[in-house]
Length: 205
Image 1 (spheres, helix red, strand yellow):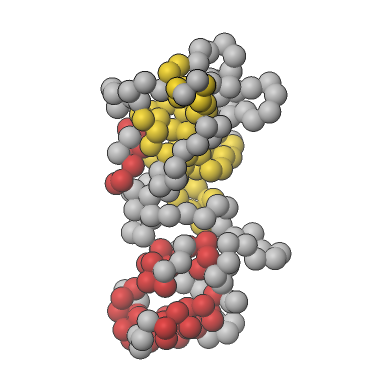
Image 2 (cartoon, rainbow, N blue to C red):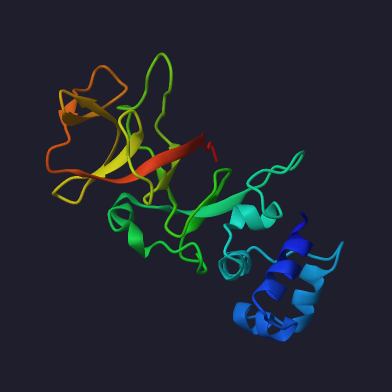
């Protein structure tokens, strides 16, 4: 399904006129007509989160016409790149509102309201074999996903500091394991997981 058909059918399913849908998004009726016309323009990036929210789909699904993937098309959404401090208070991130105060990075996984990106610092997650996350890597974090043993997670300690490690379970106890063998494995203890890493990339500039 094309994005134009998805918007047209979604608007009609909601029982909204073109003008009512335009008012809900904050655009002109003409913009909505362009979005719904085959071969017309697609919503601007700043309008995509609101359109997706109204239609009850993710931004990725909106751009791919209702599917998370589309043959031959590299579908990407964007999420805010936040600081470690902001990650500790991740609920301030709202992907259904303008993200002007944050730098954004592209993602290829489906995103939700509070999905965010975080930059990796240090070499505790660098490994000579298997997965490795070098300093400067950017990880995409989903705070609404349940963490399972084996997941790479962002955890918050009682000093409100974030740490990026692999969650492991041994003998009924949870631990935070670095991939770099020079660093020790530590019990999860009073720390708690605030997000599961879904994707990562390396940005050079």
